[in-house]
Image 1 (cartoon, protein in one colour):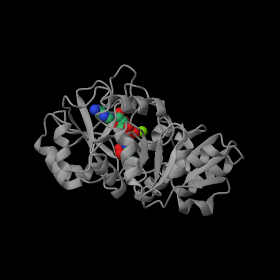
Image 2: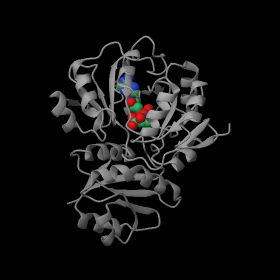
Image 3: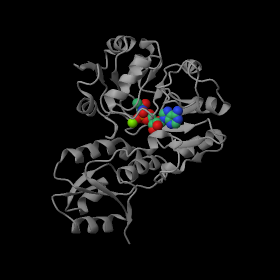
Image 4: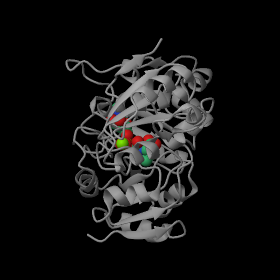
Length: 338
Ligand code: TXA
Ligand code: MG
């Protein structure tokens, strides 16, 4: 298949492809999404094939008008209205009981559906012109980091999808916050740029799913199927290092070799003599979020790197999302230095 490269001014071309059952990668404020008509079961099945995605991992449906949600969900609790008022359009996904109209494969057989109203103007325009909600997982091959630039999308999916729109680098850089409202207490399933603290202020309470911080026991059924997959793991082994700057630098410098790279904060660079891949300033988790996946992909592109020592972020605010992606990349291995 030939993949058409589209500019952000070509939303209409993208919408026509989508109306005809095609697949188009679109920019959103979080990461690029691989979109298809959410009501077209055949198009949905092509998403799973193009990504190599396990069929038991459900998709997020994207809308560009609040009222579109009524065709997707069967029940809309007050807490969902409050969250939508506070954070939509934006990087928040809500899980709600699904309507009959949503094809089975979109929600991988679950009784719920994930819905998001993205803030990105190009994503909104494509959804509106297509005239239907768009199911869109991240536009990467299953198992690689989510794409935050057009080049990442093309690298993973060229020749496998009908078109991709170049919208530049994504503002947030990590996938949306996922909250389920289908449990008695709303529950955070995936941290993102909308933080647990912010959600708590709006709806009063939120539980954090254990899978956000810990490896899931094989015997336990995950609340969100995506959490059981080994995610964002580069080819090289990643070890998270909990430490201050001086001890981190001392430790990594002692291990320095062509095979070793430090995934570090900008301020660490001056102390490091080993190979480095910076991912933002220490005090700026939003910048770390924006840079992390690109840094992981760059590490993957260097065939020499076999071992990554990563500076461990804090878990406050957006830091929780950065930490959540990094501990998965590290297979939950964290090393604490004195
Ligand atoms: O920021 C984002 O959310 C991006 C952009 C494109 O919108 N999309 C994205 O989709 O990250 P994806 O498919 O890569 O991640 C969706 C996550 C998966 O972990 C999936 O298991 C979970 O949401 N999910 C989807 N529907 C669900 C449901 N009904 N119940 C529980 N988890 C669900
Ligand atoms: Mg994904």
